[in-house]
Length: 103
Image (tube, rainbow, N blue to C red; front, top):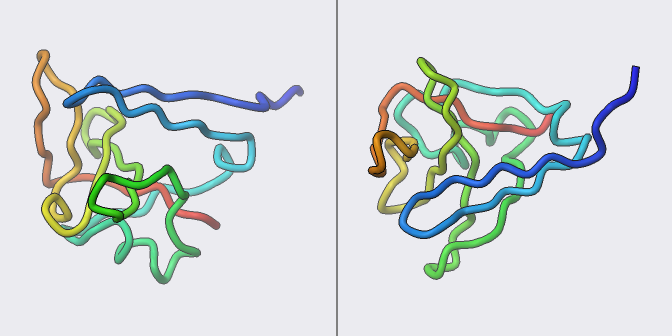
């Protein structure tokens, strides 16, 4: 079986956030966000998968809506309690989300 070497995820939210994921990223795990930032949720789970920084210097972290598996982002400190995903042409913060963590 052949493993994909690269997968890019682009999310159209307040501009475009493109997350490049390598095959090693695909082997990572999703952890329940639990209302915390993904940095905190992944702290005891190997840390977050790095995906660039916001203009505030804080890292964007990858999350997904736990109910629809739509990819999104989580960012400290302003948006740490939700995962922001594209839905109906808008950016929507969902409170039931998973964070992408390293193994």
